[in-house]
Amino acid sequence: MRKHVIAMLTLSLLFGSASLYAADLENDMDTLKDGLNTVMKTSDAQTMQKALGEMRQAAQDAKKSTPEKLEGQPADSAPIKDYHAGLDSLIAQIDVVNELAKANNLDGARAEAKKLADIRNANHKKFR
Image (spheres, helix red, strand yellow):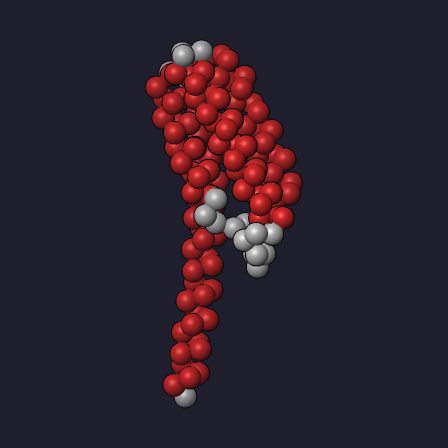
């Protein structure tokens, strides 16, 4: 009886933690979406930089999670590496946009921010 209870508790913890990761990833993706909307609409460099900082942090945090489509894949598998590479390219582009925002070149930053949407769309096709 005791072994059954331990087994059930272990399974519930395992499934509970998997749903936590999914919730965290969903929150990170919402932060990225909201940040991109702010970047595309704002006319204030500080607001844009703040949104980009939050986006960068969310993208870095998303690397700690695994999309549902890739659940069960080994950490060193090609699909997981591809997922991380997609997030790395997103982070690199966030940095490009942020440098333009720091230079108060908001039009240039918005133009470069369109590439963020392209990166998002390409990776959603693969991992969503």
